[in-house]
Amino acid sequence: MSPTVGVLALQGDFEEHITSLHRLGADTREVRTEAQLSSVDSLVIPGGESTSMAKLMDVYALREPLRGFARSGKPVWGTCAGLILLARRLQEDRPEPLGTMDTVVQRNGFGRQVDSFQTKLDIVGIAGGPYLALFIRAPKIVEVGPAVEVLATLEDNTIVAAREDNILVTAFHPELTTDDRVHEFFLAMAAEASTR
Ligand code: GLN
Image (tube, rainbow, N blue to C red; front, side):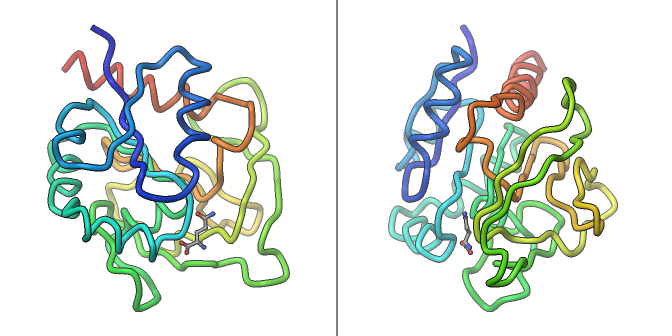
């Protein structure tokens, strides 16, 4: 049986992730409850608004189950707000992150003038030339622990994609483009985990 990919569907652009994953033939499920979480083999935490998503996580009692899911070694990919929620610590007071990845993150790290921008990135592990990445009120990863592998940086060395074992994060939004290479990369992580 092919592994099932869950997409956390509390808030944000989960439908766009599902569309990208379907283009690649993945079996996906929307996840809103602990029972749904326990029925999937990997999980995408989408972009959106991290404070709202964190509130809903508490309303749906998903915080501990999500931590347990990540600790169990199942692949988790956070895009933008998802990256914020997976951090060990934020530079801001809110929201309280899950603390699953050894990163320190600054929300809205690019300031007002460049709330949104796009740029071509070389991403470790992704072949086929530069990847056009869309940044929307994106966070910056400002510190990483020793076990974190940096996968992509901007020209000024800002870290915008990283991996720590089973956890992948991107500050940009692959679900808002039709270049599905980052989704493919995550599905490869999921396929590898399912054979362990
Ligand atoms: N700025 C948003 C936040 O802090 C994240 C933006 C996004 O996911 N596109 O939650």
